[in-house]
Image 1 (cartoon, rainbow over the protein chains, first blue to last red):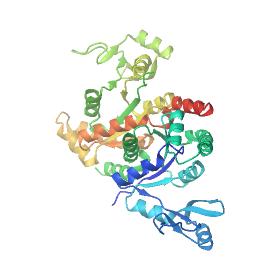
Image 2 (image 1 turned 180 degrees about the horizontal axis):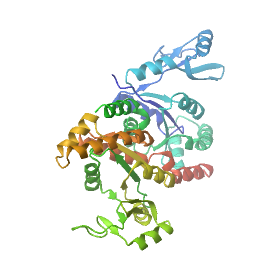
Image 3 (image 1 turned 90 degrees about the horizontal axis):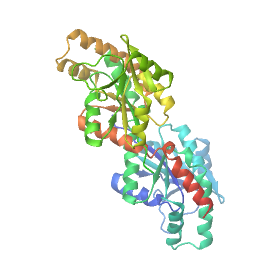
Image 4 (image 1 turned 90 degrees about the vertical axis):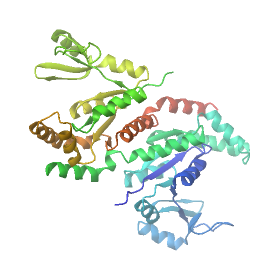
Length: 205
Length: 205
């Protein structure tokens, strides 16, 4: 029997370097990033099934009705959601699947998938977070301040996650996340097959 | 501030190789094995403070009254217990402390020390367990059967542990346990200092 993959829900402050961590996990260890479905129009260069699954409003709504999303939300008039089939197929193939998602979605997913790993990525300090956001050079100071305000709110929810990994040195952070995922296969809750087998074996010795 | 050590509660079937795993953790990674106190007489070669802390009945009972044990039990007319001060001092020094203990004690300790890691060591299969017990050559078949009966009972409690590590190849098992312990420092519950600091920092940016 193929070993089922792990579902990893990743959140963290904007500027914590989540995106880079995810890219490394994909590149180095073959993690599968979940691809969302959306009703917004494709932008130039976006490919259906790569950046997003592009759906009509009607298609999206019937997927909602059929329980086809593990989470979904509306944002600026468009739907966004994580297709259940995509995630579950990948897990069955033994792939570790990463969802980048916010706290409410994360907690919802944990209710549906108790084995999911809830991980929060944080920078070493708030000062470093600010420096990173400014250092990107892609955003004006107003946007940076908005992101810091958002971080303040997100910090209130951090404690609802299971693991906190500090992204100081990228490689170490990536290794740490991967190691946490590997260890989860030793969690008692992941081992019911082994437990049942050895119990039966002991009875029949 | 020195990082506090982790408290590891280790259980497992007799014959699973717990003792060897513990020895390797001490040798390779400087883990501290908890030394029990007992009222039984020292055997030849046993040194006070190495194998056990040898106590009189009166000393032991006043330690019980003073809440001086994190767990204790009576066995064949003698007391055995884990001195609280020994464990807590070692943890404060940043040492990872291992207790080899049975399920009831393990669950009691988890109540007192919610950060403690409850680990169960199992052989790859019941057949291999039996082979190992026979292979030791130190016990007659009756004793082997008693141990297998005991394993059957212990298997009923396995699921109350947090992690199950299978001891197939010793080195891999040791690495796996060590990695679990290292990762526990990323558990959200172990990071309240960091969380409070970054929250305050974010407020004051």
